Amino acid sequence: MRDAMTVVEAAFSGALGAAEGDVDTALDAGASAMAAAEAGWDEVGRAVVTAVGGLLRGCRARGWQDADVLRMVRRELRPEHVRLAGRLSADGGDPAGLLTAYGAAERLDRFAVATAVLELVRLLGRLPGITPLAAPPAASGGTGHPMLRRIRALLAKAESTAFPEEAEALSAKAQHLMARHSVDEALVAGTAPGGGPGARRIGVDRPYEAPKALLLDAVAEANRCRAVWSAEFGFSTVVGWEADLEAVEVLYTSLLVQAEAAMRGGGAPEPAARRPRRKGGRGGDLSRDFRESFLIAYAGRVGERLASASRDATEEAAQATGATEVLPALAAREVAVGRAADAMFPETRTQRLRGRDHEGWARGTAAADRAAFHGPAGPGPSRRSRG
Image (cartoon, rainbow, N blue to C red):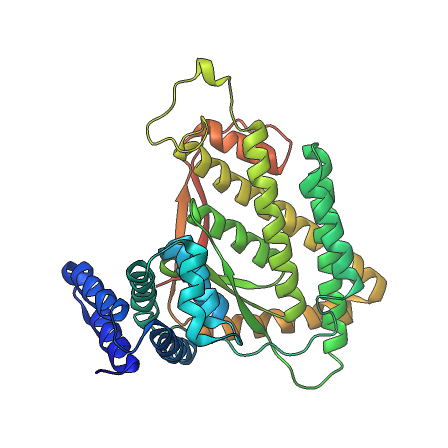
């Protein structure tokens, strides 16, 4: 009788080594062997937990953080695989009963559970190496800082209001506070030894990933960070000082919510009954071109407004504190961010996005800045991606 680990390792090896055209056959064979293992289903579950733990350690060694792995599972597989990955990566519990509990929760038989395991294994074991992220230095303005709590409250109001002008005013105020917070952090850090920029990965989810990456790039630049999009993995790596990284993630998430609300509430230029659905349309009565153009224009105009708010806050701080202290401190931090980003990503390329739908472009611009926009939809802003 083969022990459970031998059966599981053979099934994993078959799933990982199968050519694309032979994947289904390899998964069926491995799942059948696992489901019918003489050692028993509980022992198979124990072996699966051990073997997947080794795969997860391998992912970490190749630069993947646990959040990145779960993001890839969510991106490439199905919701049941995300729940399976969560169970397998969680500490505690009875490993022998894990597959039984998972099967009961998902209403799957043993063969279907084993197949889900092998599909997950094939993804995990084939993830390539990526640039590892160093732990960011400690910052005096962590997530519990009163300023960040105030910023979060402003953005929450911006997301919930039904009035676009109020949402924009609240977002601009939040960016102003972020910029002032960044200046304060720079001045404090300038008197302390050591430290340096850190980095974090922020998910850029389907659909319309390129415009979303452009929005994240705009937010990062306004907050003295550098964003590099890894399209194949569904995230951007943002390099910057910890307080700025926190601000970037908070603001980007809020602006996405606001953009989606604006697109739903004011995106259609005329009633759907009088406007034919365009080729390639997805979701509601808005076409894909409309939505992409909306988001590209939104990102470009939002970037301009955020940059303006950041400049105003910097000038205000310089007047209050003294330009001889503020400007050199900020310049030194920007240089450090640039060097750190170049070291992490020595080869990047800039991609330019083009809006193809004039109405979407106009509505997206109006959603970011209520002034009317009458120019043609043309070449849009650009953002960096890995070469």
